[in-house]
Length: 440
Image (tube, rainbow, N blue to C red; front, side):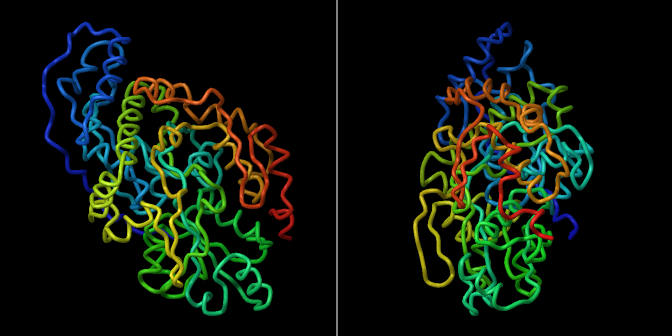
């Protein structure tokens, strides 16, 4: 589905900090050291005592582009991009972030490819899909950092719940007993939500390619489409799962962290050409958003302020209470069950969230192959090395005294008990009992 753009609104900005200038002959080493010192000294407002844009005023680290447009979809996990602008973290590195609100992931994709956007809060799998030319334009892409982990959801309609389908086992049982066309929605064919939906269904014995019809719907349109009966369930980011409960039309059957605890979600994406032409700008933007990520996860007060900020119509355009509960890990399923989930959405988590693991990117490729989006096995590691800007991230994180892992691969166990560690991706991709091959 394509919907017209909902409009753009630049973020409100805080008052500029002190304008004292550093010495004009600062070396690169001094610049990085100063940035790290400032990062540690910055207070809750993100203001910098005696140091800001001028830190890059001379020398090789000056951002090549000082104003950058970063696209976002109205979801709470755009928060680090928005707060980097609202709190003025961007100014510290000689840049101005202009958040631009987009209507659909297809719009984000197209504007990244044609250069209307410099960066975007974007689906991990979308970046990889564009790089390989899957289902749209082909262009070399780059992932600078992971913006967040966890916090997405799998929602079933209240009509299904009334027939007994309230979780995966009961859904599979109903679908086997009551044969009809079942329709589920995700947000983009190569994106994270499609992969959470497919993996979740398959782990319960439901083949999404054979047993259901899957459609693409932009996140802000999910609830309206469920209300008029266009789908039986959907996979989307917050606040739209909680909104479906609040509106009485859906129930939460699972969370994405049920599928993969501490999974990567949105990333800061751009094109490879942009990074090659503007490496200092790319590093500066990464540092500003890293600082915002750290600020968000620093405490309850910051998370509540973030929720109040992004609920505004310029951003997510919803009520604060729809955002702040699940941001804090307070869940309900719409049927009377409530729980606190320690694995809720995180933006920083002591630096564990943001590293662009090569294995994370490779995982999406394995699922693209599993579900027929890729005809042949790519060179998984090589593609991830081309896209994920690990060295640039290490530079940015080190300057901010944020720890980075030694290894570029990590190990995870998913909902079906299968371990993913990135070491034999082709074998992993071909090893699933349910896949596009078994859908015929």
